[in-house]
Amino acid sequence: DAKVQLDAALADLERVLEKNPANLDARFQRGLVQGYIAKLMKSPGDAKKARKDFEAVLAQRPDDALVLGAMGGWHGEAVATLGKFLAGTALGAREADALRYYDKAVAGTGGDPAVPVFYASTLLGLSPRNAPRAKALLERAVKAPAADGFDRLMQANGRKILAALNAGDVEEARAVARKLGPLGNAS
Image (cartoon, rainbow, N blue to C red; front, side):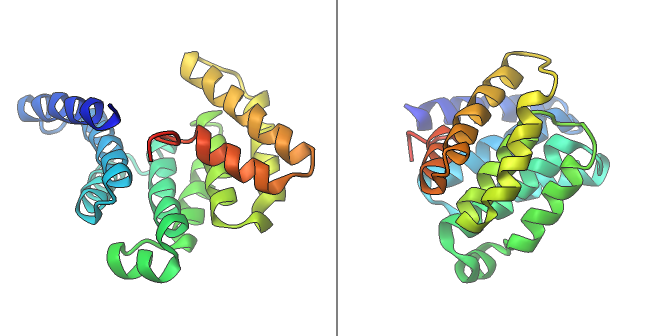
């Protein structure tokens, strides 16, 4: 089901970009979809397409918190999934780049509360030693103003992960973060 929906979204975005190749929002969304396809299908080629779209958008909008967060997630997810060596060799993904992109994304309030939740989830995926930093990000996210339903969903997810961290169960927090992440139940 997830692959069918992702393919439909990708086809829609391709149509938008055929009509307006300069549409950065569509390019960003296509990168997200390609990234999810890459994760679902374990496809390095799709992962590289996602990165190319994110980099193109960042070239035009270098301070966009959501795009910076997506780039951080791209690097972090690759490293957490494949390990440092394979992620670096196959995709050019690096943990240091994940942290750098995420740190820039959360430096202001742009992307709140989504970016801090994704950052915290990525940190937990990388190492249980990142729990204190993840906890601080989640505490920020649940207190941030919610502009829409997506923000409220991110805050609800953040509260679930935070509950496990507050109970001292880092492994449960890591499992909850994986489950609540994009395609957490499909991959």
